[in-house]
Length: 218
Image (tube, rainbow, N blue to C red; front, side, top):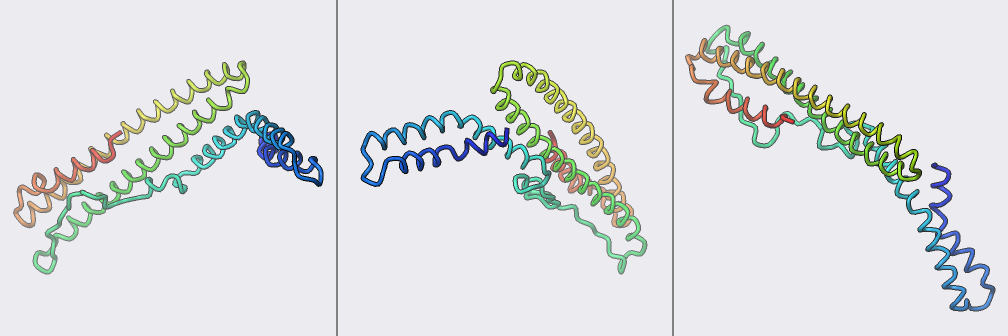
Protein backbone atom coordinates (compact mmCIF):
# COMPACT_ATOMS: atom_id res chain seq x y z
CA UNK A 1 0.00 0.00 0.00
CA UNK A 2 2.76 2.43 0.92
CA UNK A 3 4.49 1.98 -2.47
CA UNK A 4 1.26 2.70 -4.29
CA UNK A 5 0.64 5.70 -2.13
CA UNK A 6 4.16 6.98 -2.78
CA UNK A 7 3.76 6.60 -6.53
CA UNK A 8 0.33 8.20 -6.78
CA UNK A 9 1.25 10.98 -4.39
CA UNK A 10 3.50 12.53 -7.07
CA UNK A 11 1.23 11.75 -10.02
CA UNK A 12 -0.23 15.23 -10.32
CA UNK A 13 3.02 17.26 -10.71
CA UNK A 14 4.73 14.54 -12.80
CA UNK A 15 1.88 14.26 -15.31
CA UNK A 16 1.58 18.01 -15.58
CA UNK A 17 5.33 18.39 -16.18
CA UNK A 18 5.40 15.64 -18.81
CA UNK A 19 2.44 17.10 -20.65
CA UNK A 20 4.03 20.54 -20.72
CA UNK A 21 7.39 19.15 -21.88
CA UNK A 22 5.80 17.23 -24.75
CA UNK A 23 4.11 20.33 -26.12
CA UNK A 24 7.21 21.40 -28.02
CA UNK A 25 9.56 24.36 -27.91
CA UNK A 26 6.98 26.86 -29.10
CA UNK A 27 4.15 28.32 -27.03
CA UNK A 28 1.73 25.73 -25.69
CA UNK A 29 -1.56 25.56 -27.48
CA UNK A 30 -4.61 26.01 -25.25
CA UNK A 31 -5.84 22.50 -25.96
CA UNK A 32 -2.52 21.01 -24.89
CA UNK A 33 -2.64 22.90 -21.61
CA UNK A 34 -6.19 21.74 -20.96
CA UNK A 35 -5.18 18.16 -21.71
CA UNK A 36 -2.33 18.39 -19.21
CA UNK A 37 -4.62 19.83 -16.52
CA UNK A 38 -7.29 17.23 -17.24
CA UNK A 39 -4.78 14.37 -17.01
CA UNK A 40 -3.44 15.73 -13.74
CA UNK A 41 -6.94 16.10 -12.33
CA UNK A 42 -7.87 12.53 -13.22
CA UNK A 43 -4.65 11.24 -11.68
CA UNK A 44 -5.44 13.10 -8.46
CA UNK A 45 -9.00 11.75 -8.38
CA UNK A 46 -7.70 8.21 -8.70
CA UNK A 47 -5.03 8.65 -6.06
CA UNK A 48 -7.01 10.74 -3.55
CA UNK A 49 -8.32 7.77 -1.55
CA UNK A 50 -4.76 6.48 -1.18
CA UNK A 51 -3.56 9.90 -0.09
CA UNK A 52 -6.36 10.08 2.48
CA UNK A 53 -5.50 6.61 3.75
CA UNK A 54 -1.85 7.55 4.01
CA UNK A 55 -2.75 10.56 6.14
CA UNK A 56 -5.02 8.40 8.30
CA UNK A 57 -2.19 5.92 8.75
CA UNK A 58 0.19 8.67 9.85
CA UNK A 59 -2.38 9.95 12.34
CA UNK A 60 -2.76 6.43 13.70
CA UNK A 61 1.00 6.04 14.09
CA UNK A 62 1.27 9.38 15.87
CA UNK A 63 -1.43 8.35 18.34
CA UNK A 64 0.41 5.07 19.03
CA UNK A 65 3.06 6.95 20.99
CA UNK A 66 1.58 7.87 24.41
CA UNK A 67 2.27 11.40 25.60
CA UNK A 68 3.55 12.48 22.17
CA UNK A 69 3.00 15.97 20.75
CA UNK A 70 -0.64 15.08 20.17
CA UNK A 71 -1.17 14.11 23.79
CA UNK A 72 0.13 17.16 25.64
CA UNK A 73 -3.13 17.32 27.55
CA UNK A 74 -2.02 14.12 29.27
CA UNK A 75 1.12 15.68 30.74
CA UNK A 76 1.06 15.41 34.55
CA UNK A 77 -0.55 18.34 36.33
CA UNK A 78 -0.44 17.92 40.09
CA UNK A 79 -1.84 21.38 40.77
CA UNK A 80 -4.66 21.83 38.25
CA UNK A 81 -6.52 25.15 38.11
CA UNK A 82 -9.26 25.40 40.72
CA UNK A 83 -7.85 22.72 43.01
CA UNK A 84 -8.61 23.50 46.69
CA UNK A 85 -5.73 23.73 49.12
CA UNK A 86 -4.94 20.98 51.61
CA UNK A 87 -3.28 23.02 54.38
CA UNK A 88 -1.24 21.63 57.24
CA UNK A 89 -0.79 23.15 60.69
CA UNK A 90 2.20 21.09 61.78
CA UNK A 91 5.15 23.00 63.19
CA UNK A 92 7.47 20.80 65.27
CA UNK A 93 9.11 23.85 66.80
CA UNK A 94 5.81 24.44 68.57
CA UNK A 95 4.35 20.95 68.97
CA UNK A 96 6.70 17.96 69.08
CA UNK A 97 5.64 14.73 67.42
CA UNK A 98 3.26 16.13 64.84
CA UNK A 99 5.73 15.62 61.99
CA UNK A 100 5.48 11.83 61.96
CA UNK A 101 1.68 11.95 61.81
CA UNK A 102 1.55 14.47 58.98
CA UNK A 103 4.48 13.11 57.01
CA UNK A 104 2.97 9.65 56.59
CA UNK A 105 -0.42 11.09 55.61
CA UNK A 106 0.95 13.55 53.07
CA UNK A 107 3.27 10.99 51.49
CA UNK A 108 0.18 8.88 50.80
CA UNK A 109 -1.59 11.93 49.39
CA UNK A 110 1.26 12.70 46.97
CA UNK A 111 1.33 9.08 45.83
CA UNK A 112 -2.42 9.12 45.22
CA UNK A 113 -2.20 12.31 43.17
CA UNK A 114 0.49 10.67 41.06
CA UNK A 115 -1.66 7.57 40.52
CA UNK A 116 -4.66 9.67 39.51
CA UNK A 117 -2.54 11.49 36.92
CA UNK A 118 -1.21 8.20 35.55
CA UNK A 119 -4.77 6.97 35.21
CA UNK A 120 -5.77 10.11 33.33
CA UNK A 121 -2.78 9.82 30.97
CA UNK A 122 -3.60 6.19 30.16
CA UNK A 123 -7.21 7.14 29.48
CA UNK A 124 -6.25 9.92 27.05
CA UNK A 125 -3.69 7.79 25.20
CA UNK A 126 -6.10 4.84 24.93
CA UNK A 127 -8.98 7.01 23.72
CA UNK A 128 -6.85 8.72 21.07
CA UNK A 129 -5.35 5.49 19.80
CA UNK A 130 -8.71 3.71 19.69
CA UNK A 131 -10.38 6.55 17.77
CA UNK A 132 -7.51 6.67 15.28
CA UNK A 133 -7.56 2.88 14.88
CA UNK A 134 -11.27 2.88 14.08
CA UNK A 135 -10.91 5.81 11.69
CA UNK A 136 -8.00 4.16 9.90
CA UNK A 137 -9.78 0.81 9.66
CA UNK A 138 -12.96 2.42 8.32
CA UNK A 139 -10.94 4.22 5.67
CA UNK A 140 -8.91 1.23 4.50
CA UNK A 141 -11.85 -1.19 4.55
CA UNK A 142 -13.53 0.75 1.75
CA UNK A 143 -10.92 -0.45 -0.77
CA UNK A 144 -12.59 -3.85 -1.16
CA UNK A 145 -16.03 -5.09 -0.13
CA UNK A 146 -14.82 -8.44 1.23
CA UNK A 147 -12.13 -6.73 3.29
CA UNK A 148 -14.80 -4.40 4.59
CA UNK A 149 -16.82 -7.31 5.94
CA UNK A 150 -13.79 -8.63 7.79
CA UNK A 151 -13.09 -5.20 9.23
CA UNK A 152 -16.56 -4.94 10.74
CA UNK A 153 -15.86 -8.00 12.88
CA UNK A 154 -12.52 -6.55 13.99
CA UNK A 155 -14.17 -3.19 14.64
CA UNK A 156 -16.61 -4.80 17.07
CA UNK A 157 -13.69 -6.41 18.90
CA UNK A 158 -11.93 -3.06 19.28
CA UNK A 159 -15.12 -1.40 20.53
CA UNK A 160 -15.73 -4.23 23.00
CA UNK A 161 -12.13 -3.98 24.22
CA UNK A 162 -12.52 -0.25 24.75
CA UNK A 163 -15.68 -0.80 26.78
CA UNK A 164 -13.78 -3.24 28.98
CA UNK A 165 -11.07 -0.63 29.41
CA UNK A 166 -13.73 1.89 30.47
CA UNK A 167 -15.02 -0.54 33.10
CA UNK A 168 -11.50 -1.13 34.38
CA UNK A 169 -10.89 2.62 34.51
CA UNK A 170 -14.07 3.24 36.50
CA UNK A 171 -13.14 0.47 38.94
CA UNK A 172 -9.65 1.92 39.43
CA UNK A 173 -11.09 5.40 39.83
CA UNK A 174 -13.40 4.11 42.57
CA UNK A 175 -10.50 2.37 44.31
CA UNK A 176 -8.32 5.49 44.26
CA UNK A 177 -11.23 7.66 45.40
CA UNK A 178 -11.82 5.46 48.44
CA UNK A 179 -8.12 5.59 49.31
CA UNK A 180 -8.12 9.36 48.92
CA UNK A 181 -11.06 9.75 51.26
CA UNK A 182 -9.36 7.57 53.89
CA UNK A 183 -6.11 9.50 53.43
CA UNK A 184 -7.81 12.86 53.97
CA UNK A 185 -9.48 11.46 57.06
CA UNK A 186 -6.00 10.59 58.38
CA UNK A 187 -4.88 14.19 57.89
CA UNK A 188 -8.04 15.34 59.64
CA UNK A 189 -7.18 13.13 62.62
CA UNK A 190 -3.71 14.68 62.80
CA UNK A 191 -5.31 18.13 62.87
CA UNK A 192 -7.69 17.07 65.62
CA UNK A 193 -4.99 15.33 67.67
CA UNK A 194 -2.35 18.06 67.65
CA UNK A 195 -4.35 21.25 67.08
CA UNK A 196 -7.85 20.49 68.23
CA UNK A 197 -9.22 21.18 64.75
CA UNK A 198 -12.29 18.94 64.69
CA UNK A 199 -13.72 20.33 61.44
CA UNK A 200 -10.70 20.07 59.11
CA UNK A 201 -12.22 17.46 56.79
CA UNK A 202 -15.44 19.42 56.29
CA UNK A 203 -13.56 22.69 55.77
CA UNK A 204 -10.76 21.43 53.52
CA UNK A 205 -10.69 17.68 53.01
CA UNK A 206 -14.16 17.22 51.56
CA UNK A 207 -13.75 20.00 48.99
CA UNK A 208 -10.46 18.54 47.81
CA UNK A 209 -11.94 15.05 47.69
CA UNK A 210 -14.90 16.22 45.59
CA UNK A 211 -12.62 18.11 43.20
CA UNK A 212 -10.36 15.11 42.64
CA UNK A 213 -13.20 12.65 42.13
CA UNK A 214 -14.85 14.91 39.54
CA UNK A 215 -11.59 15.74 37.75
CA UNK A 216 -10.72 12.11 37.07
CA UNK A 217 -14.22 10.76 36.60
CA UNK A 218 -14.92 9.03 33.25
